[in-house]
Every structure is written in C-alpha cells, then in structure tokens.
Amino acid sequence: MSQTYHKLLCHFVFATKDRLPCIQADLAADLHPYMGGIIKRLGGIPIQIGGVEDHVHILAVTPVVMSISDFMRDVKAGSSKWIHESRQVAGRFEWQRGYSAFSVSRSEKDAITRYIATQREHHRQESSREELLRLLKENEVPHEVQYV
Image (tube, rainbow, N blue to C red; front, side, top):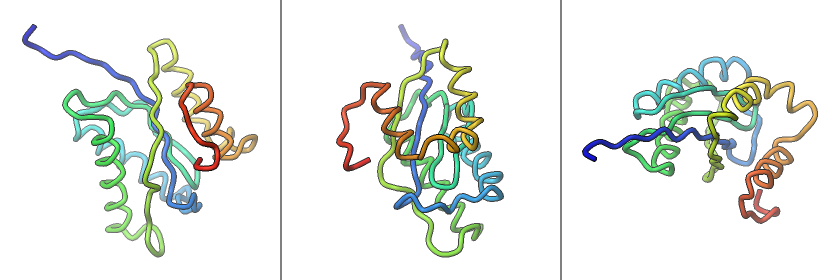
C-alpha cells in the first residue's frame, strides 16, 4: 500500500498554568477560532473547541504526519504566542506543561461535540479538577490524584 490513511479523532484537555482563570469570554471568542486555524495549518481538522476560564477542550482529527505530543506542543505554543503578541492577557500567560488526550469513536463524536460546546453550563455542577479526574477514570487512564 503506497498511501497512508488515518482518521484519529481525539478529545484534548489542557489548562492554564496553575489553573489561573485568565481565559475570559472575550479572549475565548478569539482564541478558540485562532486555535482552530493552528490545527488546520498543522493538517488537522478542528471539530469543536471550547472551555472555561482555566482550561480548553479540543475535539479534532489529528494530522497524519505528526505525533500527538508534537501536535499539542504546536497548538499550545502557537496559541500562547498569539495571546502574548495580541496582549489579550495582562501579565504573562502560560499553559500548564501537560495535557490529556482521549480517543473518540465515531459514535461518540456528537456527544463530545455537545459536551465541549456546553462547558459553561457543565462547570456550574463540576469543578475543572473534578472533571479531569472523571475523564481520566472514565477513559481508564492511569494517574496520580495529587498531580491532577
């Protein structure tokens, strides 16, 4: 076979450094589409991007030519650089070093898309930390609670 075919749909979650609540609604309105542009330039397909003040969720088809870690490095670095250059956050802005990535089946795509689109409502019931712990548990990802 001379071609490479793939369609890996992933749900990514990553937070601001120290989970500081610095992604206000006006920043998110510009940041999320900007991140979608980064994903497209990398060869991926953004499906849904959303979040709240201290973290972002991305549902995307990953690029065929990049590892997931390189993909996330470039999305986070590019968006952080844009935030600094556009001076949308007072002071220094940083993402936390890590991220979470969960595989998503075609049958789950619509549910995850809705979930990301309704993050504001969701976080009236569950903190960001509780959400991440639940996602790690549901996806059977080994983790140490004290580091989440």
